[in-house]
Length: 285
Image (cartoon, rainbow, N blue to C red; front, side, top):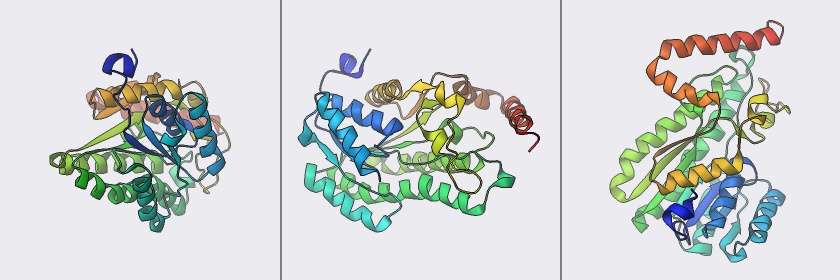
């Protein structure tokens, strides 16, 4: 059952939804889904042509062009954040929902990973999310309402091989936003963490190697993962249902969430075996 079927056509209608990382992947799928529900959507990322493509395709699917704002933004340009926040206010008069979705992953063992790669992963996946959230929160406080979301990961709940920096960053994201939830609830502000498993996006090809370069190679697990459109549909349903930690995915990786809670030791041994398998395929690296 769709969001509109269960909750009515206007569940997200006219809400101002700002999505970072909206030029591809989960962010693009979320933008399409919210636009299809009648929300006013702000699309942010660095890739302007791709943002414009997403906007144009939303319009072609029936969205009102006046309800879509392409707002180019590098979330690491902290000096640009106040101006970006003001641009959204000028366009739509407020911000109902901020979805912190920008980020990048990693595919390298710790021993082959430079310290700068860890800094990059933390800066983009953690500090940038905090910085934009802090820039938007005063508006939500003044409104007396708002909803802050972040795209975390199963890797934010379970430590897996080739992703020490990514796991550390996503664990930090989960911790920050869980703690933030406790501090802003009395202000009428909601906080939701999105916990995807393998979703069919370009995250694997864009993931950083130990030297900081993109791998350029997609993961088989990602290629066989859940379609991004289905992921977005489930996320919107979760938001509409008031779920504060939305786990979304359809593969065996989702079972790690429950296994880690029930039997941490077995989880550790399972993932050690996974790392050993990776090493053997790499020729013992």
